[in-house]
Structure formats: C-alpha cells, structure tokens
Length: 139
Image (tube, rainbow, N blue to C red; front, side, top):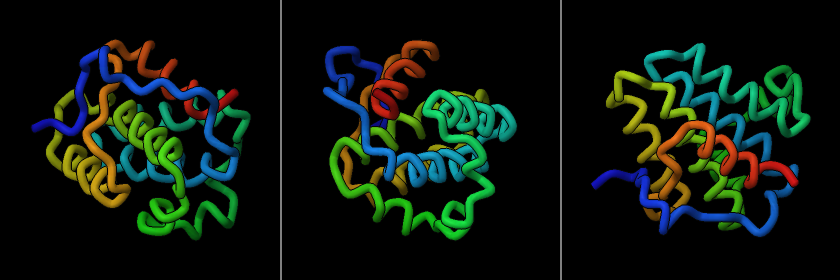
C-alpha cells in the first residue's frame, strides 16, 4: 500500500498554518528527503522555494538548523497539523524524484512511521500540491 495517495476526497485542508517554530524541522526533513531523491538539486530548490514563500531565508546557515537530526526534527513536530504539514512537504519533494527511487520512498515511510501518521492524500498536480503545502506553512 502506498503511503501517498491522490484521492481528492481525502486531502487534508488546514484551518490555519503551523506555528513558525515548526518551519525549521519541516524544512530540515525536506532537505533530508531531497538528499534521497534522484534529482537532489530539484528537491533542494523545492525546499528553498517553500522557505522563501514562508519568509524563512538562510535557514541552512542557522546553528539550530545545523544541529538538527532526523529524530530531533520529528520530535519537534508536536501536534497533528505540524506532522501532517511535514508529510505534505515530504511528498512534494518526493515528486521531484522522477525515477521513483526506493531510497526516497523508504525515507518517506520511515518519517511517516516516526511521526505516527497514517498514509496521506495529496493533490496529484504539482502546483496544487505546492498550494496545499503553502496552506500548511504560512498564513
């Protein structure tokens, strides 16, 4: 069973964005996801664009960001909305993997399990998926 679904009836819609404190661990997990996809540069550009849209620039240079680990980032996502937002972002970065690499899928599944989340539904069209990610990340 896939951990990312494209059924529009089940796509989560936030009533408001996650708190700013959750942006750093979400972007960090996005970077880790980008490292697993076949086109790493495209995955990193996606994370960069999300950071820019949320007015979070230079995040990779911050000491707090550089000290994060996969486990710490997951632990920082302390509510349902933040955990769902992270999966929406990871699924968006996963879309940059045109080869459908197993490493990227395994990473997504591992993070989903660490966050204790069910499979997530996201839009199949990239721009709609980006819009959903932005709904979760910014007001």
